[in-house]
Length: 408
Image 1 (tube, rainbow, N blue to C red):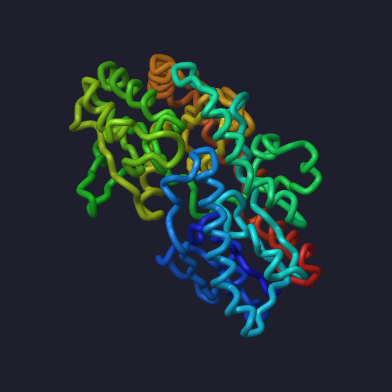
Image 2: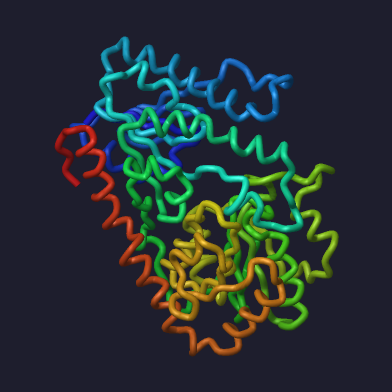
């Protein structure tokens, strides 16, 4: 198979696919991206760079569209040389929304175009108006509508699409649902697995909680309201006041990935640390961790908190469940698609730090009662989100799309 991946990040959602396809000498695998870091054996990486940033005078409704056009233009120009050298992909697999695939059908009109559809934006009914303390105005509604412009172009242009969860597929216009298959990327359950009696020691960052019996964990790409970071921190203050021997470990970066940054330049981490009474000796921010260290955090977790607005479901929640964590998750649509309260995890009001702390108390005070819940959490991932099952299905989907045979 000759396949071209398109993603502004690398390797992101395409990591497992690109890795296995790159190992097969029958394949020609190209990955066009704006990210210089990283490599995958057998994968030829093409770097594209926008010709300029979004113009500051561009109307703010269409800045995201201009950014997507600039990415699409850059990807097109970078791949022209590859086409001139004779590379014509059987299938192009592009991440939708950021723009790298916008013009790819013009460059490779005979190639099949698959798009990874992660999110379709709505001003009302999902993430944008979820927090009553953060109401939308007319400008915000218009801007959100326009964010869908490059996604709608991809929906029109693509031959096939894929969305990782039913909840995420539901966000897209119903007239395009026939194009979109639901299939998650998959969790490596051979890697993310429980370890009986695990203790947390990360000497590279000077963290040793090997003598601690109560470890509450939280992981996130960015410490932001979209992932309930302020509510989590308020819950931490309550947990620490109630449980003097409990330590909290936060994995992730002090940044905003989704949603709005604070207007004064302060980060949400700084805001919460400044506004709450916390025992800093029992609160540990690790930053981003290599996978082997991140796994140790999950394996040592006594309770894992995952909060999200009705938005894209994080890989981290599924990875925690695969590791046998007792996940205390927000009672929001993406979480409810996976977690049944009291069966394979616990659900809690996103906006209630008290309820979150109460659930932590419940778990830590009655651990034996939740052994089955932990086991069911892993079974859920094994049965429905297991990379070992989903990767062959994903490969077959691409092969069928390209009309070529590909061994799983």
